[in-house]
Image 1 (cartoon, one colour):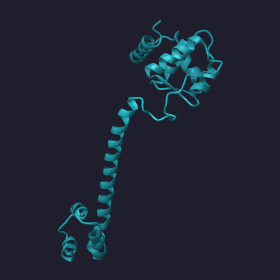
Image 2: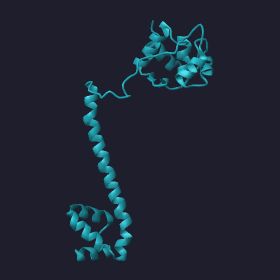
Image 3: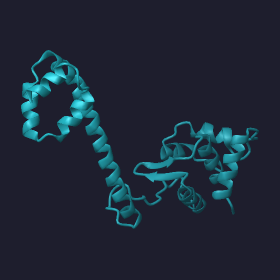
Image 4: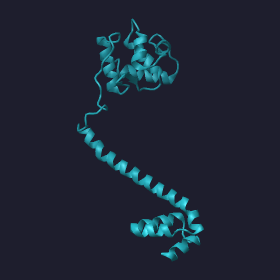
Length: 190
């Protein structure tokens, strides 16, 4: 073992090679080797060895996480999810927003993946944010309960979004025309 320590001190092995060789040794031999690493060259190599060990451990943990995810996700798809807060929440609208038409369109938006129900209201997932204003303007055509919508979606400037994108607003940009058409096709098709 002392010859090995001398070879490392003389620079015959890189930190990566030392790491690979140490992994093959039994734990007690590794411990003995580390205790014998008193030479200045070995002490200088320790940061490299530690970095290699940390990188190896991070890679190993990442692979374990990927394997666990692959094992657990198919079970979740089969309906074997544990009852957690990740389960979809039922649509509960505040009284100011709760209309038959709103329930229908909110349910369609959830099914299309444009929004989700959270513990504190709703979260709009579609980008750009202006699409939320367009959606709310179409759902609440006559009266727009902006304060209740702002509280429900946690978007304080929802009134501006509705004004800027509402059904009466003229659209000239191609991207805005696309997301409007997508919302109309998937939510407001009746």
